[in-house]
Length: 564
Ligand code: ADP
Ligand code: MG
Image (cartoon, rainbow, N blue to C red; front, top):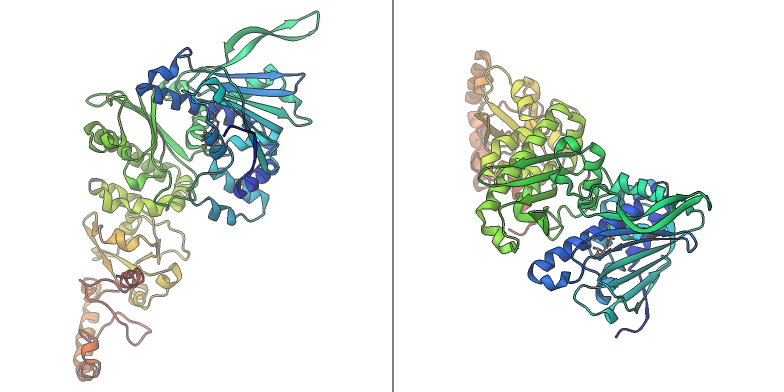
């Protein structure tokens, strides 16, 4: 049916609205950035659908965004001639947050506005930010391909409900009208709107148009003319040369494509020429999204082909252990009608994936070397994901290993700051192995009885307690020719590090304990493989170890927990 209807927002939308209005007030002009960003996405989607259905562009092929204001009505209007919204789409997209895990996420909000504002930033603030400055928002839209009588009007005061009604609209696209709250009259100015658009939306690749204005000295005010002018640079940011783009523009572009509220941590922008031609602009976010570990979560970068938007979340363009990377890849080689299936097979895609991986790894190397604080932020947020890489990306194993950071017996906190290079640089005379212990927590690892002899000898041991560590270790056996050895496994060969006196002592002790060992073996019978005299322990009388080729106790417990 197309009759008028009043519907309630999803609970999480209500929470989001409430939080946003109160916590983002000091940054309220971002509503314009968000609405322009949506208009631009809508035009991208139309251009993509029009590859197969060129008739969708009929009558109006020049995609653009327009911003207007009306002093008397006290409204600001953002309109586009993009894909538009059908009735069902409007209900689904402007009334709910369609991201898995949203409910759980919102249940974690603390009530502390400062903290929660940071958290909701992960969503990008989006369309609902209109309510920061408006007490009523109207969305008039016509989906491309539908007839004018299928237009819709969505309206809400942001209090918990919205109405949706049929409303004729002559042309395809969406017009969002904001009825400004008391006190927001600043935005009823061509000068102010232009300033905000230039600051936040200059990177938008479509023209953003406003009416020309002229000073009327008789009325002594700015008067709008019928002519439109473009107020942004209106070319795709990634196609500009690096020297023409400043940091602010890179950051704003990131927020647009990543739907993030925070600045990115770092980025890399390159044009690749040769056998395969593409431009990449890739970003590392500052914060892991709440659905980083969700298999259905968003991942990957946006794919463009010769500046035409093709798809979001093109996960084939990067390996899965780099799924936190956001950005744009614009290929000159792929066909416009490329599908996800084709992407899986394509040799061009393989070249892009390899090239992009290399760039990201170099960017991380650069951070690790020259921006240590930022690297620490990165490692805290994404280190566990990066560790997956040693199993997934054989060719880059050494590079990845160099980027890893661990807690160790050298430090006294769980902070992961020690690299393999640091460790190797501190190895003892005669030491040719990298020692580690795995456990379920940092505390358990750092209290392991196996550490005693190492502490006594002053040999550093890496303390591993991330979930992925066992998995990582099953793929990473050595670094720079030094094998990785668990101190919880039997046959730990510390002889090379023992001096003559210690060796003699060991032999004597072994000899004198022979009868004890025999008695223990008989007593324990089938329960153990072997009983050995060891000098590994300093304070504890005995410990259980596993054979070198056996699974570690920690991994065994994990497998048991998983029902294996
Ligand atoms: P996001 O842009 O991160 O998806 P928003 O809250 O900004 O989230 O927008 C929600 C959804 O509403 C969009 O994903 C889109 O489906 C729809 N939408 C918003 N603005 C427009 C528009 N101008 N044209 C078409 N669809 C729109
Ligand atoms: Mg948006």
